[in-house]
Image 1 (tube, helix red, strand yellow):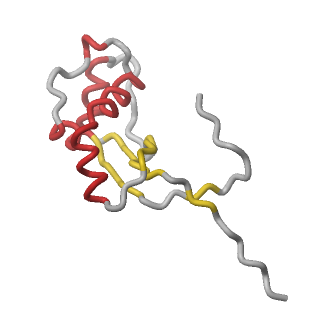
Image 2 (cartoon, one colour):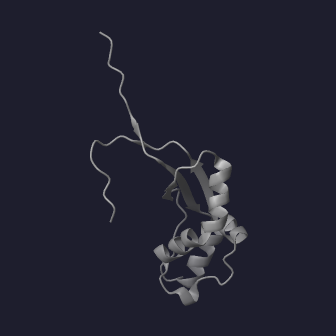
Length: 115
């Protein structure tokens, strides 16, 4: 018996996966040494508008990295006074790895709910 072809629905977004690197962990553990944070492989996925090339996504990221940077800092430490003052794109790339994906497939047959 031939199995039917499963049609997977793609989402009209691109994804940017952001993972913290050593300088980020050094900073958070300096700020809050009482509760050290161990490096891990987990990251945050940011969905952005669909663009037709990774170069366009990278250009978008260069213009909009600040919001992502601040979100990553805020996830670990909410006092903005303790955040690094120098938050350039170079510092962002030093503190985080970034992976881009242009193919987002939704495997769940239910609506996406935004919180």
